[in-house]
Length: 325
Image 1 (cartoon, rainbow, N blue to C red):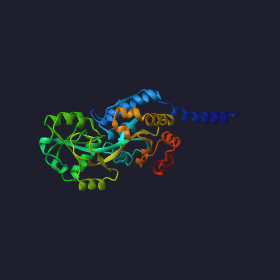
Image 2: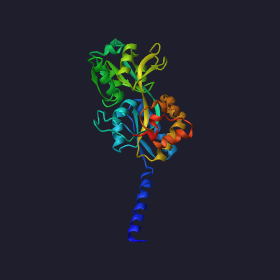
Image 3: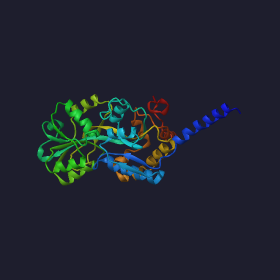
Image 4: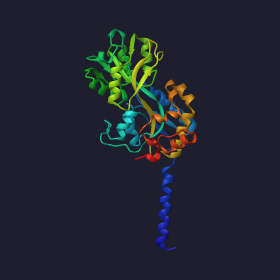
């Protein structure tokens, strides 16, 4: 063997080793969630504990301002898993995210669908507020500015011509401000029942209200990634009857660099551990393998796709790994 041949063989050997190194499982992982008091924070803790116990990789949560920041953290490698709604995910993939304008996230990959996030509204009963139109001129908490609620409610109320005085911050803090009379209402986005809304309902005289048919239709037309949603009677104790609103689906996502086997194990652990997740928060009742079809544009991670194929869930062509790009 000539010296050149030996060098070439050594280069091939080194090159062949690179994919193996890239597939090494991380020693620990972090999942980015949202501010305290919301469903993301509770659900994320359940994910972290289940992954730690079942997959065997110590996993912790990182509190954030919500989906938009989660995607920025994921893309920069500061977290390994992230929770997001469909709207911010679409914007991130197309370079339209407010926190990272022009920065297209082409390596975003989906693992599984969590649950739909309905947009919800609550006000003090004494305020007389019972419709979105009543928010004009009022002091309204919209959650974290970079969160799903803060992002979309700011746009939507503006598009409706409502000049509410929007305040931003953690939903738990804003619930306290509503109880103290420092806010007239809160508009938010989160799983149901929302912990902060339930707590307010148990301690204050409040009005939890929905959208008119015309408002719902207008929002759906303006945002094709939102879906109509009904908050069933009984979700909260005070409303009489169902409440109509809109929602976006939530997904656990990862970067394409996450090793295939880790993505497979996380997806398998969470979907097969759904009963444990429901015990963590009832929103996980929708954490079902078949709901991956609610994802219409985020490519599946190959590791996650392997799990769906094993259990016989048909993967839509639009999100199949071979459809990436």
